[in-house]
Image 1 (cartoon, rainbow, N blue to C red):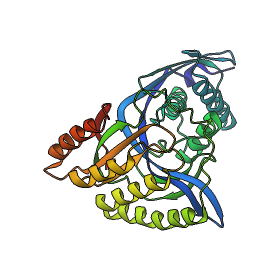
Image 2 (tube, rainbow, N blue to C red; image 1 turned 120 degrees about the horizontal axis):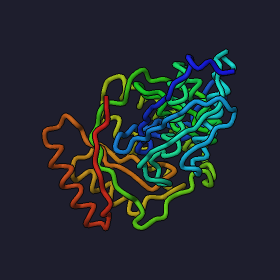
Image 3 (tube, rainbow, N blue to C red; image 1 turned 30 degrees about the horizontal axis):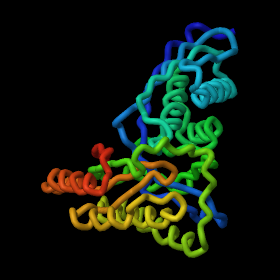
Amino acid sequence: MVDQSDRRVGSASAPMHHGEIIQGVFSDGGRLRRGLVTIPCTLYPTTATFFPGIDPAITVAPEWKSKALRAAELTVRGLRDLGLSCAGGHLEVASDVPLCRGFGSSTSDVLATIWAVEDAYSATLPATAVAMLAVQAERASDSLMFEHRSVLFAHREGVLIEDFGAQLPAVSVLGFGTRPNAAGVDTLALLPARYTPWEIDTFDVLRPMLRDAVRARDVKLLGEVATASTTLNQRHLPIPELDRIKALALEVGALGIQTAHSGNVAGLLFDSDDPDTNGRLAQAGEMLQGLGVHEQWSFTTGG
């Protein structure tokens, strides 16, 4: 029996993301793991509301949010294992995050759900436990649960490879769609990239560069890492006209280019503290239009 005093309507919001600064294969304790470093983005948050019930079943609206439903079930089970009196209930998920683009819509749904269930029972799980729940719910997850720091995250295992100890340095991002009129990317249907030994060695070189960029708040170095990762992944999910976009980035003074390595969005990175950034963003937007890239948006990351 659920103690009525221990439960309330729970609600929480989670951000989307804008692809990755880096994604590849990395050494970890004598083995190789697939990992990534995510760029959080607050353009379209997801909100979840959980109404605890007495019956064991959980329902969700909209009904097709099956990953969020699975996340709610796993979270209730996990809280019950910790000794809390939890049952089922009803979950409502509201999100404007575009689907199948590389914005992390599933992770946003799942994370908002986990936090909403926690809120309903006044519980707080560590980020590492939330990461494992998220991967169990959606098979592969981004690292948005590590809210105030950047991490190298094994997205298919739910394992933290490295905590860089701080947020990514703040940058302004000119985002754009890489494939006009594309229907999106089924991220779970994508086969994992098969990296060459040279590529894996290169990721091990980029990793300490990224660590230094975070610790020194070095946006220039951050852009170099992002561009290198984008280039390394080009043969796995190519960005049309990448060479011309990289030349454009150099001309307008962008720090580099990042991409959703399992999606169809990318972004030019700019120094948020540069007084010329607004002009650079406008110039870059016009030049992208000249390349036929008409779907654009902009935001600034935290840091």
